[in-house]
Amino acid sequence: MFSEISGELPDVLGDFTPGAVGSDRPRWNSVPQAVRELVIGEAEETFARAWPLITASDYREFTATGNRARFEELYFTRRRMLNDLVLGELVEGKARFLPKIVDGIFLIAEESGWQLPAHNAYERSGARLSLPDNSQPVVDLFAAETAALLATIVALLRDELDGISPEIAARVEREIEIRIFSPYLGRHFWWMGRGEERMNNWTAWISQNVLLTVFSLKTSQPTRHAVVKKALGSLDAFLKDYAEDGACEEGVLYYRHAALCLHGALTILDTVAPGLFGQFWQQPKIRNMAEYIAHMHVADRYYFNFADSSAVVDPCSAREYLFGQAVGSEMLAEFAAADRAASDNPHLPGEWNLWYRVQELLVGPTLPAAAPPRPLSGRDIFYPGIGLFIARDEQFSLAVKGGNNGEGHNHNDVGSVTLYKNGRPFLIDVGVETYTAKTFSARRYEIWTMQSAFHNLPTFAGVMQSAGEAFGARDVEVGFDEGSARISLDISGAYPLEAQLHSYRRVASLLRDRHVEIFDTYDGGKPAVLSLMTCLAPTVSPDRIDLADLGSIFVDGGEIEIDEIVVDDARLRSAWPEKIYRLRVPFAGRLLRLRIV
Image (tube, rainbow, N blue to C red; front, side, top):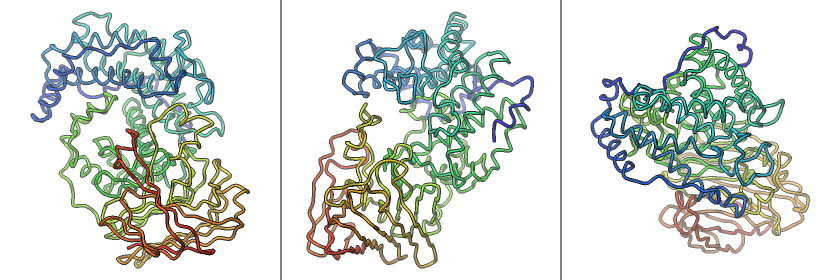
């Protein structure tokens, strides 16, 4: 789709300025006073802090122990500190933060590698090298993010930096040429796309940041053309793995690194080659990709989650609003504006992408006042591309995940149900623990959060679902009407032969303004036990489960057991309390009926 217009590029591709330059005082003085004070206060705090030291031993820790978090904390703290200082300087404009900004630029320019240790490989599944080889840079997610950060600083503060020394911008440009442009144009990295190989968020995320970098700096026209042509091919490779319905198989957390980065890439291309890329905003598939996040939202910070996504997601920013505007989605623009208005982070303090933060300060305050919320009951949707069913009424929000177990960031969760009542979690998808080497290795499915036994799914004498595209749902039927919403699917194909399963039909129904029903019937050679995951302390009697003060599950089945799970992982604790629960409900026969009120 994109590659077809490579031959139509103008001879001169324009510049892209990611915000307002530091000398544009009217723009920067327009940042609301309360936000100005917040940004300058954080810059002052950062100015007083020491930069983290990063040693070779810190880099090697990943290959030695599998721990990602400790090195990444050092790495991202440097970048967030530099962010804070730059925003403080842009907002204040008095040059007092410039010396420490220069220190941060040179510290990062002198790092041996910008790629994370977990990504330090030349092949998609290749061995991770214990130290970076600076003669053969790897362009990963965060090498590209780092280049975009430095290019954005030079684009917005070039005059101020040149006033100290022209060598500052020159050093940034040399490092980016060596670490990004040369390897990007000179070799093939898996995320660039080749043939039918499946892509993921990396493709859009890195492509956006390379485009941002090449057009923010004073690069040559041949370099710009070469980068654009390669990026257009990658964006085609990225889009091919999305169904027309626009659903992100990696879960809502990755929407912001996938579809929303496609928006960023298109925004840059539309600016540097006016009139050529605007046609793509009208594509139904791109509009569907844009609106996905709004359809996944439940209430407050809660979203329907699956794969490696958390149930609790940060608020929207100006980016989602701008995407809604670009594709002509009033629904998305209204949702993003309202969600942002409910946020207490008007300057995105945890974000490492400086462009996003600049957008937030300059565009965020111009967003319209939040419109009245749209009724939930009108927001049923089915995404056939990933088999995701969502239904709501004024009380319940129900999701059922079909699809297969070979999707990006997959958990073995075919047929799993997620349920909220009155905006509160009822039956949950636990999500994923803090990433380690094991998370993306051959041992991934040894991790409990990846296993079907810890989703709202059956296990057969200990046999769980298997990973891989061959293991999926079949015979899926979906219906929505005024009184009910219903999905029926056979999930027996998600289990291996040793489960001795001939069929397993799950029918999940939302009977609007009444209750939810889950009706499971199976034919197989082993006894079935259904797992139900919740973050509420359950009270069990022979035919019902009471979940704290939220509601009850009426059960036609056998004796129910409760497993208490202590949650001590920081990533999981961002969504769940210190204890969650697995209820194990044995089938008395070949069917099990749950009525949830």
